[in-house]
Length: 603
Ligand code: F6R
Image 1 (cartoon, protein in one colour):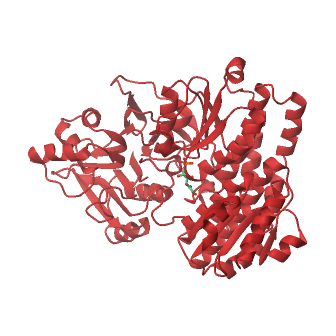
Image 2: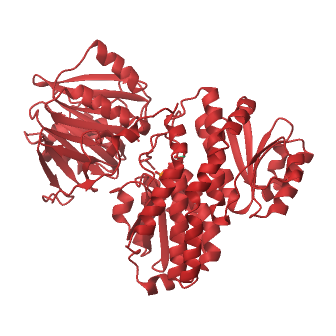
Image 3: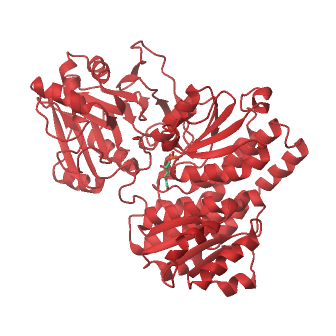
């Protein structure tokens, strides 16, 4: 949460910083600001609300100067006000700093700093950092940042500039992402790659404990031990044009329609990768369980894997909400395989749960969309989803590609454990290759879902019901609807309905029911009858055009028939489209829904 950028070069810093912030706006959009070094001091512009507001302000009073930093905020400590907006300045107006993360010991640090005469202007935890750096600064900004962050506890990424060293930017990372790019004429830092891709695709991903000093054409890096480190750069394959909306109304709409390609890229990448998982055969044979760790939409992908993998692998498989896992003394040890699923690879809840499992000796795999992300670096093995850049805050193509990657991983594990012969594996992989085509067919329901959205956009509640393998999809459908349209939505395993939620059903309650001929069809029909008997308004997504279903339902969307493991992928598409069109009609900010951020780096 929060996006930070830094630039030192020959061009006007303000424009480059604002452009970078726009590309990071999915990380938070409560307030924004930039600070630029001008004539021996720091000039500042801050505004409440989105970056468009900051732009308006800068158009009236532009800043000049070729070194600066910027910030787009997702508020944690302190309301989204002008005072709490970043960058924060020191007392002399020479040092400016932006921060992403949380300083857990900020109260104590603040008391100590106030006692030493520092005057605070905001309620943020971040402001302690600027005062700490100010105290330590004796001409060497990197040294001052290193000494300051040693006193801070929590998770953070920071970027600082000082008017006395006007050609450099200094960054530090602990727990929150930070990425650097260096060109002969410019140096850049940012929370995420999209802010830098218009400048360079050669990026250096900082590790926890790193401090970096950048000047045009030069980079110095120190590790957590304070020693100089070798700088290494990764090449990012994304095209900067991916960050444009094309002809679509929203990034989310574009990203939903990119899913056939994203699934094909993920499949191609995995199938052509000659690298195994890097585990010894006996390690996989001796596994006593698999634990999938994730949050939000990624957790739903993990739940699908739980349903599919347990019979496939013949050992207990469970998906766990990462933020709960770490604090309940979970059963996990050297014979456990832990699969952490996170599109960003930086979600702090997932990262902390993953580290807990790792510290207990578990073997680990990361499934992520981001090359060089923390999870990927820390895992024994990494599996990439090749969704490309996803800008809409609500996950769409990263989810379907997670499903594809997890299907592949499940098959590989089953094969390695001797539960799937080479012939069976080949046959399953052939089936999996149908995923992009099936997603394309599912996208053909777009028109029908637009019509449905017209009918239901005024509702205030919605229930999502399903059984078995489709139950995690009901959860995902409900999450998508509530996060982008702000309609209250709940999901239940439809067999659970009679144990309580059925009390909610009357003629005003829309019920989205997912049913597939591959999954407990007759039981699901029974549950539909129960809804119908209470006059619930039934919208059914089905892969069988069954007259019985039509008779029971108010609306039916017929989806292509798919092999059972691909059923969740197919059903994802209409659920996304339904939520998208409802949100669009309601006029919400689809790509940047209120209160959300794309990468959640606080616990
Ligand atoms: C929902 C959504 C979130 C994320 C969750 C985990 O649309 O995007 O629920 O899925 O915050 O994020 P990652 O996958 O980056 O760990």
